[in-house]
Length: 120
Image 1 (tube, rainbow, N blue to C red):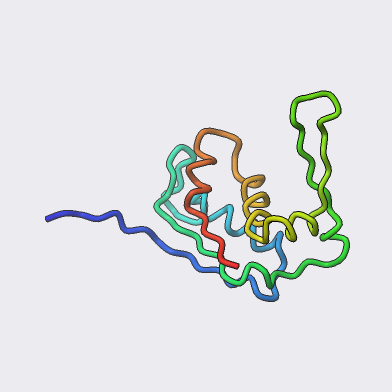
Image 2: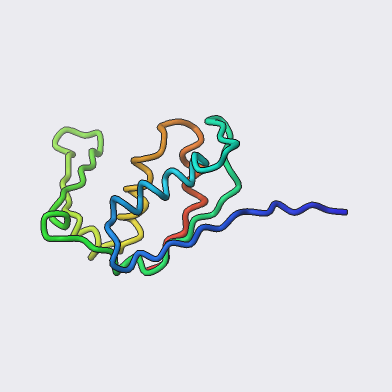
């Protein structure tokens, strides 16, 4: 008898919810801190799906927040507002950047991010 990997699915509806409140809960689930068998060196078998990402609540000051990138070259620091990034790439990148920043900075972070699915 074969055993399949059974993943728990958590589905979030972003309509009318605040970005930061949602993302903290999602990061906690991706890490597995909501499970009684939490181990910091083990990635839980969970999948997090975010629906209606484009309907998340963002006020004017939150849309003006800037993201920074550095190319590594002199004068290579670029600033981009959240509003411009949404126009250019969509809401998916906003959610991914927020969750990515809340996960621990180690080898497991990129693997945990693969369990996040954002639907606009």
